[in-house]
Length: 309
Image (cartoon, rainbow, N blue to C red; front, side, top):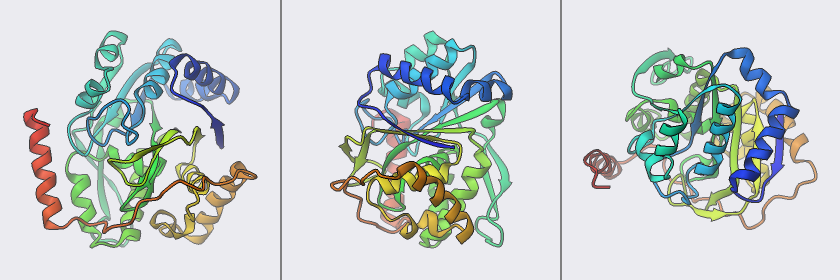
């Protein structure tokens, strides 16, 4: 299942009406209820930043959904392991931390690593870890930001679930691939499958282009993509922004039959829709980090821990 919706902005009243309509029309509430009463939302935070930062899932987007699910009778949490800082710090910068507390929306920090099976026949990635905190929730709903990415060409539903990896493990896994982006992408796919999100609702109302995953320029894409298969959603995003999916590391990491399956689903949804001609994709750099980038990362982490960032 993959759906594309045109949404003009982040007005909470409008978003609330849309979410209610979509969940009713497509039976998504019933699907969540069948799994249990606890729903964890996984936005893309990257690091604590301003509410209008196009690199992160917009606070009105995830808070509207959180409040809708609370009103529908679910226990709701928001969980993330940003590259820098914490989930709580990101919510505070977005101006919604107190709203979460007052509304009974749980803030979940991904801290405890649980071993999982990884990529077969790859000594660096044959065993992976994912946040143990996911196990306390009946359903995981993935809320990625649609944006360009200078290491993997783009970020969508699949890559966003990499945020379910705890702490600096995310950073170190970049270097384990020895600068092979396809090998890195195989690990990203294995990680996404382990996270097992039941639904992916991508915030492309205002996407980010030119550079990413941080520091992108806002782009009014006016798109929300919703699906239960993250790779099909990601293929549709590529088509919408003029990026050839099969040329990206994420889809080069798939076997040909799997690639054709997700391509067919995305093509059905995007049929007749012209790609955005002026969406600028980032210039690609190495997937693995050099010594200077490592030092900068640890310095930035220290600043966030001491509250100076």
